[in-house]
Length: 207
Image 1 (cartoon, rainbow, N blue to C red):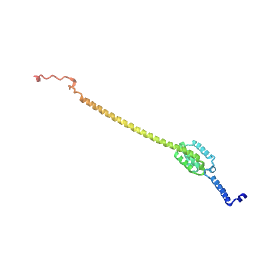
Image 2: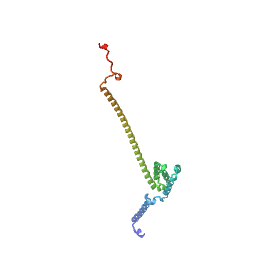
Image 3: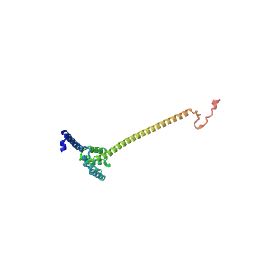
Image 4: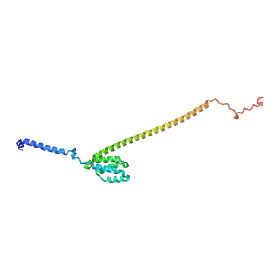
């Protein structure tokens, strides 16, 4: 303290300001958003409950699944929405667009409960988005196959019609060729019916 008193007044003021600035900076750094200490504690209990809920869905029928969905529909917590996501991903109640909407709502929430679910929600959202992308691609391929099949059927029908027209034209040509042969053939001698020889001329006319 005697050393501090021996310093000039300006030097003591500068030292005090430096100490105050250091304390302010330390307080500010402790409140940064990225500080792990400020992040909500998460011990995995929520994920464990969700996994247990997911296993329980295997024993439910369609009516039970619908009843469970109605019960959860009235809740607004992040865990309830994650349970609705699992219901939307169940094979008997599959609804990928609804699952994506629910996951996006969980990720958009910033309360402690929702933040505790963010990692799991982000993982599921990646899987759901990929499945939706593959479904869209599959629909496009199916439509392309259907268009190709319709085009093939049209081409086959047009080919059959062309063959039918060609056959009809060939029949007409064959008929015309037959008529032409008949017209160009030499005339045949006309004979009485039965092939009998004509009667001799009357002597009265020969005298």
